Image (cartoon, rainbow over all chains, first blue to last red; front, top):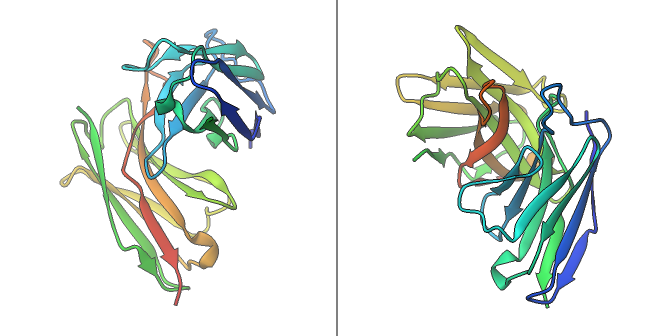
Amino acid sequence: EIVMTQSPLSLPVTPGEPASISCKSSQSLLHDNGYNYLNWYLQKPGQSPQLLIFLGSNRASGVPDRFSGSGSGTDFTLKISRVETEDAGIYYCMQVLHTPPSFGGGTKVEIK
Amino acid sequence: QVKLQQSGPGLVKPSQTLSLTCVISGDSVSGAYSAWNWIRQSPSRGLEWLGRTYYRSKWYNEYGESVESRIKITADTSKNQFSLQLKAVTPEDTAIYFCAREAPTLIDLRMDVFDIWGQGTKVTVSS
């Protein structure tokens, strides 16, 4: 099973400031087609995970452009250019290249 | 608009079978390009993929190693739904259970994203 490691565990952020979350995989997520099979989700309290970024760097429909994903192979980053209060929650990375699909442990973004 | 609606009991006794159903609207359980997954979430195990079912001229099932001996995922095309059965549950199976669609975003139609999730069902295993 691919192990996904996120950091930090917790991230206090002031509104308007940037935020960055790291995700590392134990094996490469780069497919022969050139895409990285790494997705990012946000889970707000009491809700299901909602898709933010797919294939490493593509924003899902309706996701604000302050969210961006980057990276390749085993190292990935989710960035929020200017955090808003509605961005609070737990962020997860997830790999879908290898079976079983696997998730990172989560990063809790708290608004100061 | 694709939606998944989960149903099932929130309390199951130890050694019994946990059964949950996920009704699909806006897509087909036997669609040629999607798969239908069960995932659970607990404080001790985080988000854990349990298994999937999908149809590609015939039905396929894949299961996670931790539950492989106890799990069964089935599809009902007449009701456009899929179900999870987890046998011989213990308190360690206490979790929030989610169903989710896995679909392709690229032209090669390889599945690459879990894009639609059910609302989640909190299941407690206790006598």
